[in-house]
Length: 301
Image (cartoon, rainbow, N blue to C red; front, side, top):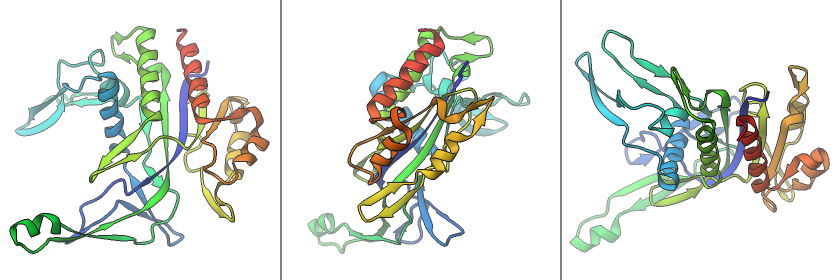
């Protein structure tokens, strides 16, 4: 039985995650690659934060689950000892660590695995010059100056869920109806994912998504989604995707269980996907509806 969901998403946004910075320059988090280019990214921790934030805002996920505990003389912020996955969707989906002095603590690995959201366009050292003249002038003071790195780009991240571990933790096992509900809520969050940063709200909802329900929890399309520039705009490279779909696991081609969702009018080679992959390609919303039905079927709900 198919037991794992994985999907790789493309979205478009501006300047998603800043690091420590130097002097009065706010630096974006970045990777330097061997091709000499620099790519910005939003960390998996930041994506997780926004998923949980929206889970609370939209579905009332319980966030009253954290305490400051003492462990060997040190104070540690962690989940409450008497809180379990029954009480917390966050702990169920993203795991937890509860320390215990001399006992190693309780640990549950994440059921939902996330990659960083990495830019698909290289960063070209764009800076925004800022000052607080509007406030400083009110009291006759000189303005404070700052420079902020800016990068507007397509980004991609991958999410993988081991469905047979949702709602299961030691002696605890939740009803299948609750397991389905939690996974479907997560999918609803991903459809409207956004990030609040520096007075902006960035839209992280999918422009392109590829994935499905498979025999193994593996991020098949992580690193396989790349962009090219054409005379008509940005195009998603189809060759790495096609070759990945031709790979086999347990005697079945990955492509058999794969579906692709595309938002119309964004990518220049949208038609190429429909020509190559036929009925496996659809708009983004039907993609999520298809995956939701597969999840309900898996849990028998």
